[in-house]
Image (cartoon, rainbow, N blue to C red; front, side, top):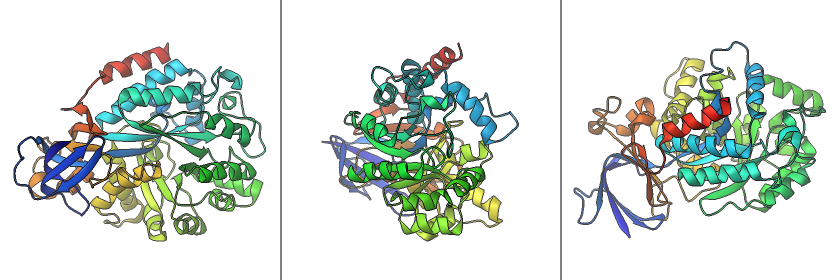
Length: 443
């Protein structure tokens, strides 16, 4: 047993509580007591604001290598995708391990304690399988372990280059011969104690509706999370309507994919019927505002999704920037731009999207909260920096969501063990790890 006395902690309500004592037993919180005015004997003092660990519900770690190299280019999502494919063509298990370890450690410094890695670069060049067909997936699991964060490896089924189209040369690295072959490969994964495996229908461009049925059934039979890129681009909707006569959300509903374990990533260009289908199923929608801005994707209908019954989670997607609090506030601020109206989402609701809702979408329902029985995953944020100064006397939750940054994260705990102390990773020199991994890829 161990104890943490938190100067302030966000437990569940709209505001933080002063003087909160957390009792831990191994990797779990066993009790939460607010109103403790000073640290009891034997308790470790944690200054600042303590919040549950942050969940990055959608990441492509390898795309961290594109930071600063694609942002000034003209074009669209589709021209950016060609640059991303050129990077994907260079990867191997060793380079993925090095880059993902550094990227996951960068996430840890930003307060991320669990990452959903949406994994689709499965095989070698030309689609030739490695001796272990899960070699790159295993590298991603090992990268998270070395960085100290939890991971849900969201293994994506990818079969086609588009409706009725063969995959192009780079896409062959992503593809299986069939959904049944995908399931057989994923069943061989052994994730370990701080890792879980989920499924993904990459998109309805890359997986035909009949195959989507198989992937959805796999996730349902194993009580595993199921994710999919959904309506990220109007062209995706148009291709599905032309080939199959329905939108991606409609096709997913017909495939039996829409349920509480389902997460629609992006969900940017939805019809009202789509919103009703996702909300009616109690599905989650993972918005990735910094990437959606960077790729000129658009602004997702967050408030309408919530009103329909969906949950919201957040992701860094391309990792063009890793700033979880920016993802949270962008949900509100982008809707202000789109509607001309302020005040769509309360700060505490945005923080729940970044914590508990993200954990649930990744198949860790016992995480993302400061509550008895919850995982001992938490983050302390300093209140004496330039962004947060003065927040301790008012509402640090609102200040954190609307002004906080990764640089304000002081300590990060995963499973009762600190992996970041005073803003430094416990075992990795993260800037040096990033420099080495990126230099090796660029060679």
